[in-house]
Image 1 (cartoon, rainbow, N blue to C red):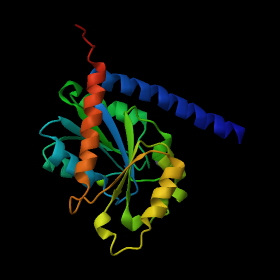
Image 2 (image 1 turned 180 degrees about the vertical axis):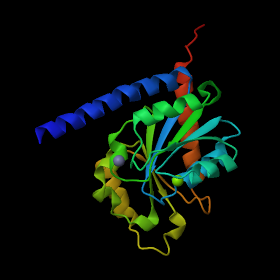
Image 3 (image 1 turned 90 degrees about the vertical axis):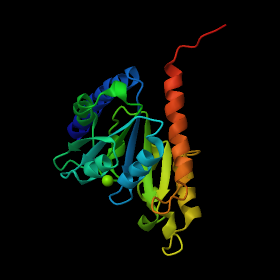
Image 4 (image 1 turned 30 degrees about the horizontal axis):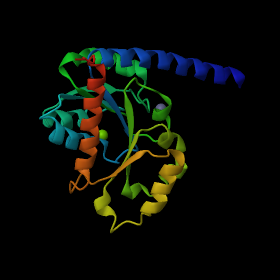
Length: 228
Ligand code: MG
Ligand code: ZN
């Protein structure tokens, strides 16, 4: 029993070291990295498509697609005109820092401002593996039900943003928005929550504004201040 725990701790420590090296590579190239996590079908790829449509005039974007086996999502991203790198995890249910490390050389980081990483659809273990990105985003969706923060607390604790997708379905699906928001707030006080619909476009602009601001601030941070 103790041995198992030790092995897992070693794996996580090794992952964190590689994540730190990934972060250093992104920072050196002034790339802001976003790790997008969600259950299958919540709309990760759809949200990323909205980001490409709304931001690619002003930000140079690339997407890394983590998938169990297929390249369906990577093809959707390329159809939008953005660069996509596919990671097939070979059945692994999450991305880890090694997988991102292996994907990064396929991109010209100096030519990118924003790197979006679409994690494998899963609400459990992706939150245990840091990748080296700058912010974690969780996409929930109305059909999944309002109890998800309560059932998957680990996922909700480690993120900087919660998107609630498919709000166009609120009139048709039982979903207690206050109960959902309370759960999110208990687990992650003050976290930014963006209710939106990729289908109708409602709420998408507020999310894009957040991304735009974070990318700009992150790059500005690294420009040496000049005086006088
Ligand atoms: Mg997807
Ligand atoms: Zn996993």
